[in-house]
Image (cartoon, rainbow, N blue to C red):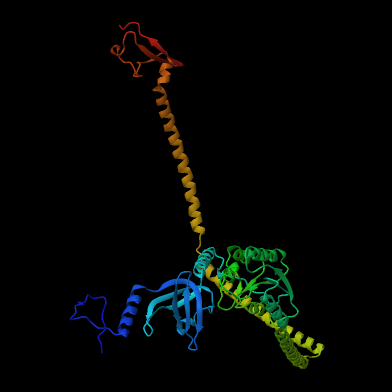
Length: 453
């Protein structure tokens, strides 16, 4: 078996040592070289010669205006594609560049496929979803519960849409008593998003339905793009009544689905979620009526038995009055005994305590006589002491009056002070031209010294 050549390492291609490759080895080496040189890459082109084999593999040619390349998408990858390509479709594929060794054909192995432009639209979808989620439009606390008994159902869709027929059929089948109000609007095309938002706002303003269904049939992401609009999301979130979004099929998700109070997989599912079948309600009412009748019969039976018991216990009114009188007399007697016994015990106890207190009380008559004698002696002694003190105070007052400087001044004397207020006792304290203070009996004066002798 020939040894496969490694083209990544240098080789000596001299005449003597030139390696000889088989076609299989060459194709395998080229395939590995292509796979290492070109990692998984997104490639845009147009579908041509599309074939779906019985094995489930897809074979087609991807081309543009100037070139083409063979492509294969194996069943394990094709089963996850959300659409089946058709001749002439513009697509983008995520593929690995390789070589089909059996024929030596250069081709690409497709891992994923999407419609052309879907990548950009999906990025815009994710950015808008992230923005509105951050604004709180998708928070579960904003979701409202659907009414249990809706009388009127509003529908926002195109009058020509097949989704409208599906919804009306489901409503007639499940709840023919429910009224339907259509708010017509285009669901695809230019300015469709603004018209859808306006229709939702109209339904909210009129407020003539209990629940609102926003729906359309399935399609590509471009077909459903009108429901991936910020104005539509805010119109759904601000609507007065609960909103059910039934846009597309099970695998289709739009911004309207996240903003709505409830998402339905299809328009028909939206109609089924909006109303409960009339037959179910009637069956539930019949069951409730049966339970109510059974409960009433049971209550009547129990009440009859209770009445019979009360009848057996019922006595003649005169007999009942006699029994109550006897009971009242017994209670009165018991109450009298109950009141007298504690009172008698309390009186005996009080008498005993009075006797004990009288025995413990001392005789204070002798003490009172002695106290009166002491009071008399104290009064006499106090009067004598006060008289003696008054005489001593009079003598001291007379002596103090003799020493009062005012009396000396009244006899014609004066007190002389220098400028500092010191009493002048010698001529040395007097300065010629200075001032002296002279105080007499009835006032004072300031004099100027002319000379000192």
